[in-house]
Length: 314
Image (cartoon, rainbow, N blue to C red):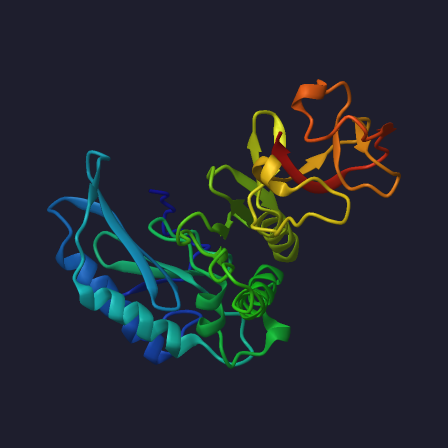
């Protein structure tokens, strides 16, 4: 745990004094009560103690510890009332125009000094990553012009998340395919915020990071729509796009394991039949592996750009 001494540069206070520097009377009373609750569980011989608290919406975390005379740190178990007092203190100090804080710390120095530190930076919760909607509910009613840039970015992501949910809900098989948060149903993609960056995780759970939420969404949605996965060194698409035979094509019953795939630039293909034909094979595919008859003509073509289409085993 990080420790900072109660020096002259911090607003410190004593239990017997009036309002602390930088705090009104109501806030001073709340901080003093928090300090007293921590003091009550400090071990004999303690020199310093502190309790840290973080909250986003309904998500809360806290930890507390004390340092003995021998310099060893001892974890403290504080009563639930401390968390309620922190929440009340946060509400007391929040206004429609002030920059909101999400983390706070009350520090004690033996025998009777205490101080409050608050932090408006993005909180790093250990147990769960807050979703953008958690922040949106937390700061509802506050003036956005007074919010820090990182929080504005998160609030924009909350609006984007709601819009994305509405769009995906109209597509068969897509609801929940992309989800803001740490967990998504099935093989869905997750977008979570870690240390100021947006992390995207797919079925392989390997994270790809982006600076902007919109870029993270575009990446995840692109993979969901195309259903891209790696298989045998080629890009195979899992989405159920229907593949139908066109006029002049061989019956699809001649093919096995139909799937969508991308053929990369430079690949040489044999096109079956006329220049308007839709069936191609990798160049030099043996004739006995072609779904064709002897009268069918072929022409060799080279691709100049990525091409998406149906793939199958002959």
